[in-house]
Length: 135
Image (cartoon, rainbow, N blue to C red):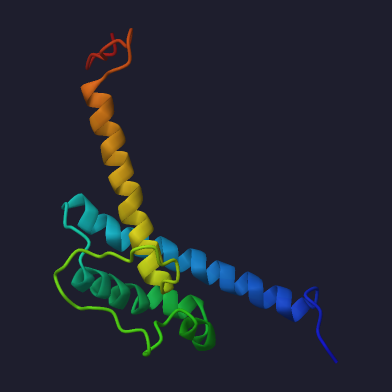
């Protein structure tokens, strides 16, 4: 007998996976933000360190069962460099979850930095400069 996509067990498993993925993304973004704040470039070695720290997070491990946690482990057959070279995946979109979350965090930080730099160079016309006392 085939189970349909509306099977309650399948729906629950999908919900648990989405919750775990969101949880892991939050953890990875928090870890990456520490390095971003220090302006540490994303290298392969740092990416591996972020991955190790995120997957070792005790809160993450306590909130999700071992089977689910295993889904986020990078397969042993997917070796990545462990060098101080900058991370570059090229056009690949098949990344381990932690790697993808870290790359997105760095990309967003870079876009925000560029936006702020452009805003600083070209302030909006008619924009008033705020004074410390609110005037």
